[in-house]
Image (cartoon, rainbow, N blue to C red; front, top):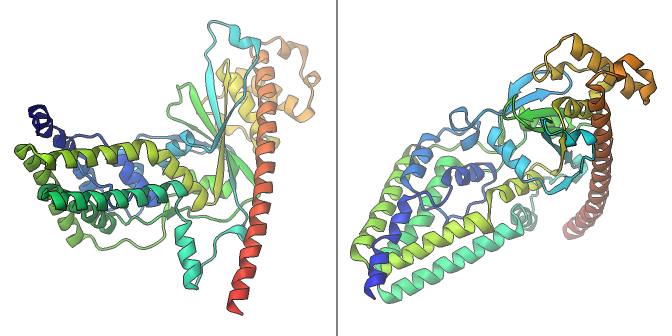
Length: 440
């Protein structure tokens, strides 16, 4: 081996001790959706700390726990309750990984004002499938195998297969070349994955309430009440409440972790010892270990990113499709006007959810009354001339105009989702026919 390669071999395996892989997020996705291959578990010292400090994950996934997440404020659009989300990290990943993002331009002249306090709004539309289209428990071996097979996305199954193929090939090459340190390290990775599966479950989570509700609701979310980026979740009441206000449900009880946690600590320590030993020898063992670490980092960041895993979990396990609609407003009042327009409970004049954002006062009462009168009558003539001369009137017209544009997109997306569900139902009926034929 050339001298420069030996110098690299003495440094590169130390990446096993540096956070090149976002292990906290990977562990969170593993607890949520179980989509991390066994060969993908190199553990750094920082990763070991979070692994061993989150052994009790019966109720919340790793990064949804209070001590490992930042608060996501939620406001119920019907009752006005303000509460911290019980799944802040999972919800943030959903907000950033919605299946399709539709941008609606705002052509209001209010945006031309140089002093405008612009606000960004993302409307997340969640639509749950009908009960008749859910997966039912199967008892036939072939049906259970098919259900397990399609639980993961094609992308994940392909990556897992390629990874196992690469691991087997690398082990064979290392064995032929007598690279025993790399053999030990590569064997330690799936063993560590098995231990993590025993300590942290790896079972895919579900929503506590899986019933479809015909009552549409909205929930407003924000990282800060003084921020400029807001999210409006639009969907069935059961879906929103289960996702934002209740802990995620573990489908199987947690396992005993006493012995498994000790074994996990030993395997992690062995990973570090082997990586450091390969640095000392400065031979091909170090190169093989470094290549595998790079493969894990690249596959985690590009071929199996966490947002894609969470989106697959939402669609395949929770049977929920998501669409993101983004737009911009010239002020907070115009954004609130659009939210009031989109809120189905505005028909009952339920506006207490605005209180944490805009405190009640005489001016707000005038603005709110004028806005609700326009929404109820459908015309601006229902508002007196004196109110239309107020500075906030232009924000009402901007908000209603953008609310109508967003409503049209929501209607189109829900109609398209119903069409897709009808097609899926036809395939499901064909599959049921095949099952009946098989039994006969």
